[in-house]
Image (cartoon, rainbow, N blue to C red):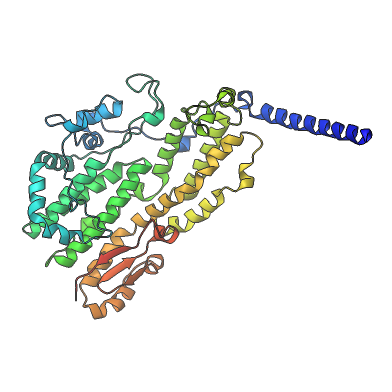
Length: 446
């Protein structure tokens, strides 16, 4: 019995020693001393600074659309981006707030609703006339070049976490587009209506052409879809209505190809990485216990420079594989590439920089929705052209007319007629049916 006990204790001792050696080896491979040298920025991921002086850059005008009455939107927008105190909410310029104003063209017939509520909408717009005047001024500003934030070493943002830095705000800009769209729907004649639609179209294109960040480009894709649906509704309900050729042009390539926002997102993640000086903050709460505080200080399992190299490699791979694609080509390749990035338990179990690999890999597949949404944005001009062509035919001829349209095979297989509606499923709908409903574009009734 004693022999068995002695052998058991000896075996446990050897097992404990082996475990301690494994832990010691892991610690040796995962402490601050094991980190890589600083990772320089790969030239391919470099982002550009605005080429327009701030006082001439409409990017700052749109940030300051709600500046208090009498203040310059451009000056106010510059203050916002510098991190200076903003005006209190009650001092900001008011926006239209009614439910009918915020009609959603994806699920509602906004043109019909706006025309039915013409009087209250006119009264609401009259109450915020100064905001409308700012929208008119913004639509005439020629230059728009988004400024991406970087860590500041002086000024109000110095020494603050990058996560607290200001981000572009689009509520004012979205309301300007809505201002022109409502104006177009309620116009007394086609000439006035065409002018308002033209302002909405040129403004959204100008902003799209100067957008760099993922959030800015995602807004441009959303505005493109809304404009497409609203124009289809307007055509179906407005005798004599036609579309200007300029409204049927594709968006700029910089907003249809992922390369621009890939570089901006890589830049953003490089900046935010500075907030993670103690990576345990990512997994512990705001009031860590003694052991957690010790892990914060020791910084085990997360090597900042090694993690940055992983991030850079991931974004470079996306840039090389997907950066220059758009439309159907992007929609076909993105799911393949994202599937390669899908993490499993085994791909997360790295010996060195364990937490760093988890941080990089766990969020990688989330970008598929953005690639697919961007692919969808390339189809809107063709969809509007299809609406125009089908409106010119009697309902009985439309199935044959749809089959004869010069559309790509990828786009055609997503289209169908549902009575007096052209339905497009879209590439994002194929991977996220609950998030991205099909686009329903009404046709002139028979």
